[in-house]
Length: 393
Image (tube, rainbow, N blue to C red; front, top):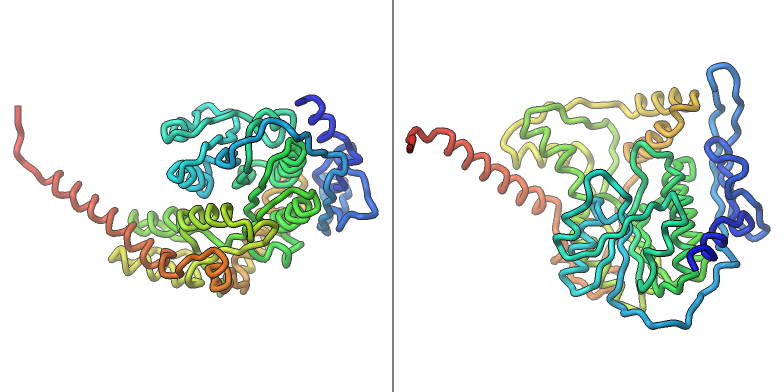
């Protein structure tokens, strides 16, 4: 079966895709009259490998040859595969699933330091790599639901995991009769085609919808957990905090709340095929987050402000050279996050659909207050212990 599926995944006629400034011509690059668009970018090589500014468009079409191989032995609805299980969101998905009694399998790339904490929690860990489609089918045997939290590593080309890997995963899930596919995307990804990561997310959404796979798409705005390393820790350690002069507002959400709402949606048949957006109770600017952290930490932050114009200039500069094109792609995403965009949506309709009380969603004030209270208490205890003068032999 694995060889048949691999043949299906590798057939060029199954997928329309062209991203010429990073994708080899012989890769998945056929065209179709039913495709939505195609990744496209002009490229001219001369001395120094200079490339022109690409115009990136996306197009995806589901593989018509991917067939459901059922009927077979029914799988339990509680059998799930979490992809990207070691990430900020992925580990909370795993933790919540185990707490709710699901049989959790985690797809993890082979690594020098194994993800033993997932096994310690009670999950099953299988080694596979989205950039190697032939490793995917075995991970899906006996799986009812796939929850995809994965994203590429910073050092990888964005398309490798976030596009090519996701296409292979969706095709394989459809072919092997997976009953439901949950895909995490980014809020407003359809409004920023100039940003490769957001355009890829939008394309993947389209591909998933066109595949015929039963699915739920969840767009996210931002994680509260990410603010700890970005602002809280540097303030406590009296290190520089990097911010921008942009008025961007982001409705951060606790990943534990995201995980809880995800499983509520998973059990609600009325949510099948829907696009949901999860956002926190309030949208915050960077300066408001820093001010909140300063108040809770009881000390001022050493803020280094990076003007948005500098980000734009850096992005344009890195676009000039082929070897820095991936850096420029990620700077493009940073530029959007530091523009005047608002990453927030009203949640009343979603709460009503899922039967959730808005009061049960953790606010950023509460989240950071709990963090600082715990850290400051530990620091106080350590300081008290260091002042003890009694010595026992």
